[in-house]
Image: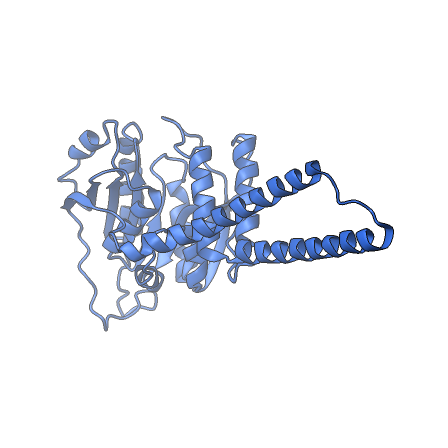
Length: 328
């Protein structure tokens, strides 16, 4: 009985990573060749403004490389989605292009898949190398998203992960335009295994994950996976209404019983300002959800590919092909 070799896809989004790509491609080529004779590396240039496209041009005839050049910067979630749409392997690795995801862990992840896991993701052992605002913001973001959400999104989970072909197919079927990929990984389910890791130091460049991007990602994740803000604000509104009715009854009784005069203009103005602010916040929360609905209704593509170069050696698998982990 001959064991069918597993085919491997590796998706790598890149934004302004020109200095890191040559070493990354060399490391991935060596590691994937050691794991399987059938592999592809899918590099997505997410509208880089440095020399990323020029660097990739030197590899356009490199065996096993697939290159997608976006027409502009669509964001990392869109780049990951493009890699999902392109991946043709039995398993698919996701990793960053900044060399902080050690390729040496790929054999361990592949072995976990052979042992039955359908999704393997790596979890940072600590975040000591990150600034305080990012650690605090990330923790707060996941607390909010998981509060009231029907699925649990793991905290400190990285984008370095392995997906079975079934998981890839399930993620492709999801129609969202505003994508929070870590939430979608959790939503599709499947047998999942978390492995600890420590990211390698960044050799070149700097992180593109700013406070603004963290806030946008948090809002996308919160509105995509939880209705809790709407429910909490409804409860808050009900409590305020109850207090207002109670206070109104108190003032009315006080006037008729004790002939106590109505409170002055300061109280009225302060109350009006308070409730006006609360109403504006309520409209803002509704607007976030409505804005997401508007984006989905437009049905615009998640990304636009300006150019594609495909040197992949992976042929599309027949529907009745046998699961390669069990042999043929």
